Image (tube, rainbow over all chains, first blue to last red; front, side, top):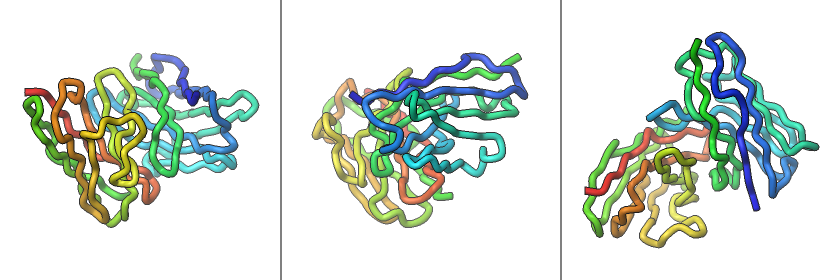
Amino acid sequence: QVQLKESGPGLVQPSQTLSLTCTVSGFSLTSYNVHWVRQPPGKGLEWMGRMRYNGDTSYNSALKSRLSISRDTSKNQVFLKMNSLQTDDTGTYYCTRDDYGWFAYWGQGTLVTVSS
Amino acid sequence: DIQMTQSPPSLSASLGETISIECLASEGIYSNLAWYQQKPGKSPQLLIYGASSLQDGVPSRFSGSGSGTQFSLKISSMQPEDEADYFCQQSYKFPRTFGGGTKLELK
């Protein structure tokens, strides 16, 4: 059974760094790409970046200077780090598995609030 | 980046009514389009992929059509459980981009 689960701090102070973990089960990170997508409260979805099955990464150019995605295949985990957080980075962060370009499996999401 | 423009932003439909949601891509994306349904507090769920293929487990009242730059999602008979937000997403180029969403309510 394919599962993804995000974890991380619910509250981050402005200018600080966000660190999130996506723990997957039911599939191998060396066979599938995993993406990060976020959603501000009451708004639409924004693609952030991806970790390819071979370890390569791609980023949204709007976030590239602040964003880093990595993984630990032995722990079945994909990590997101984003620095210099501001209030408009508040939202729900999802990890999702890429199946031929679309996202059939999503984590439950984790709400991140940027506030002092 | 490929811009995905969805319309209408919101829609109110009666029980049993047929509705359509449109998605316009700023450049041709062939059939590289997916539709998602998102209910409050939940993750998006894949409904349609490849513009017209129904994801396993999705009711047959949902259908997708289009190619190139113009796409649509149709719900053939509105049900109470279809109240949700709907998003389109292109998978032709990076960055992956989503439409702004359509909020569907039951009248």
